[in-house]
Amino acid sequence: MNLIKINYIIKLIEQGKTDEAESNLNTLEHEANRVLDLVNIMVLHATLMSGRGRDDIALRYLQLVPILQESIESDPNAARILSRRLGLELKMGLLASAEVTSHRLAKARPQPDDATLQAELEKLRQLGASGKPLAIAGRVPAECRPMICDPAKPSWEYVPVHRTVSLADAKGRLDQVILRCTRRTVTIPATTDTTWTLPAKLGQCAVEVTGESGATFTLIDETLPG
Image 1 (cartoon, rainbow, N blue to C red):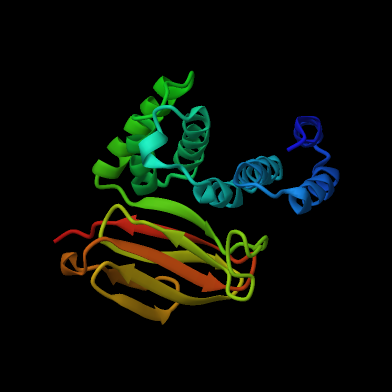
Image 2: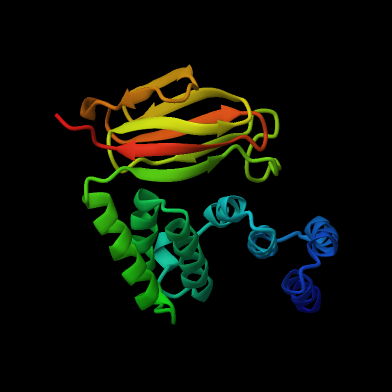
């Protein structure tokens, strides 16, 4: 892949010329014909989305970058991508996801930001263990492309730290809450100020919220007394 074109796109993003950067990136994507090219394309899309203030979409692209466990120690790109992923997960308060990424990053090549990221992760861990509810900003993506999500049914997903979740402060239409657990999947209407408790017998769960593109809300992740 043409490094001159890649650097030009990055420069456009840094200059705030995101529409021009996207146009050039789409052209570059059509020219891609190798796995490494596609990896670079996904990383560039992530950079573009962060440049537009859409860290949630940037994270989706980075989560799709294939990182082989057997080569994680020797692959310099693995450490760089995992470090970016962890930074975004911490910024958005995604503790469970950040723990997984941190575990993988520990096996990769050291990065300059490792100590800072670990300090931020420890703060988030302490908040998660404090008993205080975690308020997570949710948004049904308006930038769905087949590469990262289904444009016909966009959704937002979160792995809770605790076993009780609820939705609040919805702006825009929300349709369904899908509780995807290892032993069962439950689909219920998405309503605000309704509390759902995830029994431990269901195993590890993820919460998926569907609705109209661009709808925003807050997910409350907590442990209720008693």
